[in-house]
Image (cartoon, rainbow, N blue to C red; front, side, top):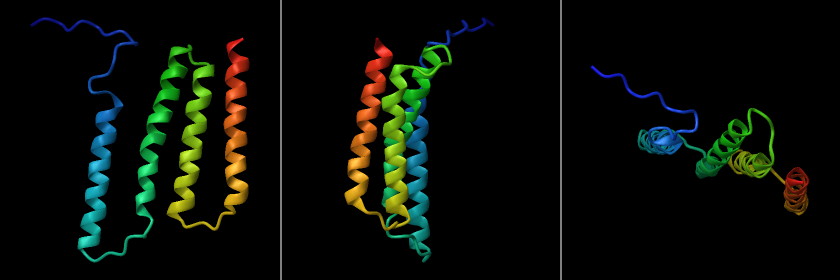
Length: 125
């Protein structure tokens, strides 16, 4: 029997995180439809959970950048982290039907994105 060659830390995972996320989405949607068909009340805004899918991919990108940068915060992480935070915040607002003053939220989101761009530009110098 031969031993498999050791893989390097930079080698891609078999299937990557995408296969796990796709499986989790299918299972989650199946559970929601099963509960609905069994007569359980499902909140009307359960669709907001789909906003977490790109948030998970953004966090995976930030983690990959973190590992690539030797376990330190680097310029490639800021955009991914901000994207994930905004998507998680929007998910919470829609899922729990929070009363939010959108006239304040959207300018705040633009400010956070602008700060992320500045941090990234400063880090590159």
